Figure 1 (cartoon, rainbow, N blue to C red):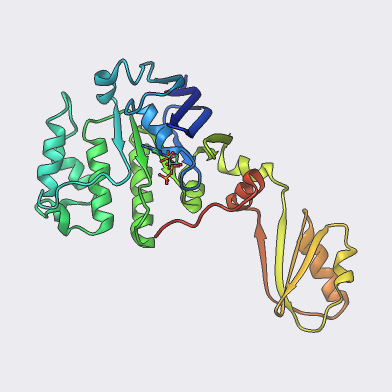
Figure 2: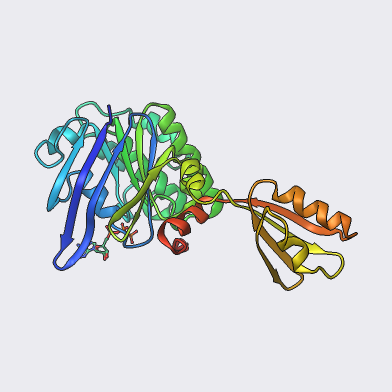
Length: 305
Ligand code: ATP
């Protein structure tokens, strides 16, 4: 049985339609991604899931509860880390986690949580003096301090450097391994591909697709791409005549060939027959980026770093 069920959710702000007929279900124990560009309606959707906004239409059920009606009961089981939530700069890490723990009947042990999140050394550091990555760890701690069954994490790694981002991903996996179901809102493709078991792609307030990252990639033409620098001038027709080849493009000294299964062998044997060496040969598979373009007709906005 799903732990979250969203059916035909609609939400507008005045004339602006933010969420239009969004439906999806999240299974227990998974990392479920909500992926889409800025302004797609991701935050509004998860705010409705958390009971922080009232939908105009549609139903939301979280662990069998109605997030608006059963708000108090839900806060015991659902941890939320919302975008840009910030603590007072002067508050120490330990004070913040203990304060949030005091809001719950059966909180996690603050000391242990601080340690698990790699913040033992910053226990007595003020929030304003932490690095971006450490501040994000504190916000994860606050989302987990009530020992929730489900955690909603919104744009967790925006603004982090690549190492801090990778560390945060590891942390999220550890949290999932402890049995917490995670809803991860992101506009960062690599994050979705690396972390999510399944994801909903949202664009313009609508769900475009719900699938595993691999399933989404498999929906687009299972394309291969080969790049190389030929050691001698190359007649395009040699490649274009191959049944495996779809397109051939040349940029600078580089040739990019796209096509279907068997492309690499077909291209390399034609080159060998013509005594051309393929320098810097690279083979690329379709990625979630390609799937996003195929589904929405444009690339996902680059993340704001
Ligand atoms: P982002 O990643 O930029 O936060 P998002 O996918 O989370 O984007 P939402 O924050 O849900 O998107 O916003 C969806 C749309 O609704 C956007 O066009 C946004 O400008 C608009 N919107 C969001 N909150 C409000 C509000 N309180 N009042 C008016 N419009 C809003």
